[in-house]
Length: 284
Image (cartoon, rainbow, N blue to C red; front, side, top):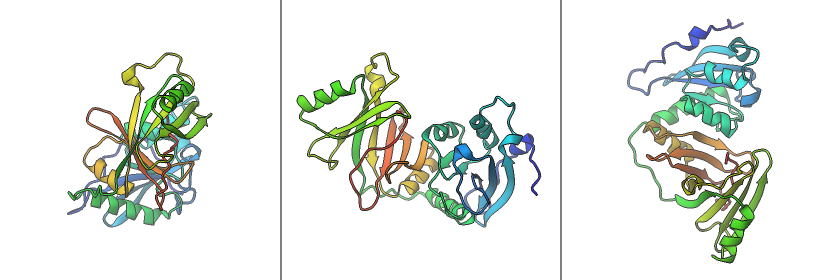
């Protein structure tokens, strides 16, 4: 049985580079049996840590959440954030946007893009992708396109009335998000998502009118090979509060990055064949 680790062990120096290759990556994996990436972030009580280099993954240790809680009252998520803070990447079966952003702020890229995969194979593929992304090759944007701009509004029905009655738009889709407490609608022209659309979001807990600047949410860009693109952006130091993540509803893969002024850009990879649906589940 693996020994229980000490807190000071987590703070060990980052793995060193192997000769002529990308530096080794420290990766935490949420896995039940060490074979598959199959645990939900919020349900995991143990994380297996590897250092991955050009020769493959090397087991470092297994970390039990219970062993690292500072008190019985500490939120489990806070314990996990601290205990894997030395890792560059977290691979999980499922993860929500809130813990994903919290980990990103701590320098940990969390993703469910390898969910269900064999751990060894996924870690080798992950390292190869990161190594390729570090090479200075141009991005192929021939299939990229602008999808929508998101605006926060005080009254969704009032805004829909304005855009449809005065500007002739059509409501393409509307949803109520009870869990995250916001309403969402997409409006555009031509009866579909073939062109640029507007995403309107009304937060149920927002009592005061939005300041115009605060009402802007993000712009969205439809992309191909989103994981490869985001690996390249990360290698170039582009802030990425939400690495690529498969959505709970629908088959889109979504990531969020930030431009030099801090404006958010949503990157969306639609399923193949590309069906124009821009609705995504995200924190409003």
